[in-house]
Each structure stands twice: as C-alpha cells, then as structure tokens.
Image (cartoon, rainbow, N blue to C red; front, side, top):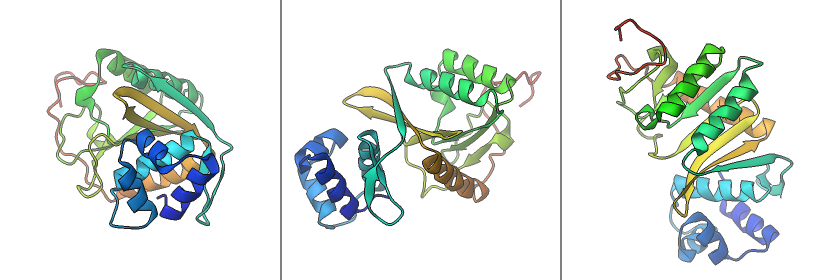
Length: 222
C-alpha cells in the first residue's frame, strides 16, 4: 500500500499541490495533509484511491518504497456500460489461453442481462471464473465452488477488482461517472493474483444459492 513518503514524492514529481490531489481523489486538502504528515490512521480505501490515481498518471511504486515513471499501459472505460466493455476485453484476452478471470468484491445482483449473456459466452469458451464475494451473500449464479466469502475484515463495499492475464481492472466512480481503469502490467497483475489466491485459500465456500438465474442450465436444481 502507498506510503506518505511515496505520496509526497509522486505529487512533487507530477508538480501538483495537495488541493489538486485532494480534488482528484474526492477527499479534503486536510486529509491529504494529515496523511503526508502521518497524522492519524487513514482509511485503506483512501490510500487505494490515491495509489490508483497516481497509477493512471503514469507513476509506479517501487518495492524499495520509492516511485518511478510507469512503463505500463492504462485503458479507461466510462459510462453505464463500462463493465460490459471490460468483459469484452477480458473475453478477447483470455479466450486464446483459457485463463482465469479473478473477481474481488463483485455482486451478481447488480448484473444486467447484457452482462449475464456475455459471462455465459466467456464460460462457454473455457474461461475460468473465480469470485471473492461479500460474506453471507448467497445470490450466486455460477457453481458454488467458483466462489468464496471474503473475510469480513477485508470486504469493502464498492471495492471491485478484476484480474486477468497481465491486467488489473479497478471499478471506480469519480464525479458520479462510472469508470473502469485497466492497468496492463505483468508485475502488478502477478502480485494482485497472489494476493487474491491467498485470500481465496483462507476463505469459506458458500453452501447454498438463492439465485433463480444461473449461467448454466441446472434443470431446476441449485
């Protein structure tokens, strides 16, 4: 997770003041000042948003605790169909290699018919799906073994990520506009996959579903 030192360094590298950063990530200037001066304990979601903002600006965090210009490729999808647009890229990317699509924090109750149809196509093409979902959520449209309930301490409502191939997608909403930001970087994607897998093996598999809609025909069985 990004540190106060890295925030100061990234901000200075970009030549922006605390207010500009605060406006960009939706917090107050005082919040940024407190974080940089290590006053109090900032929310993990705030630090994640700041880190994501710097990534979209072309800044990468180094393992040694510094920063450097990123050599990655950033794609942004905007609007109400942004998640569907992301799925088209996931499909095109993974179809050839039959890879994994790892979803963290997703909620199938919010899926449109268009999204459901696209996910069915992806499954039929051999793409493997794994989802970390809200603890206790039983609205499950796939096979139970494809899901795990995240530990309560790790679940954050609205914090949705999709990891696939050499890419990590973040679902965000800035200024009320739904956006998906995709960062194409092998190192970042591998680290995100390892983190996902660690949570997966320490999480509980759901034992029932209350959904009446499924990706595959179950002949009336749940």
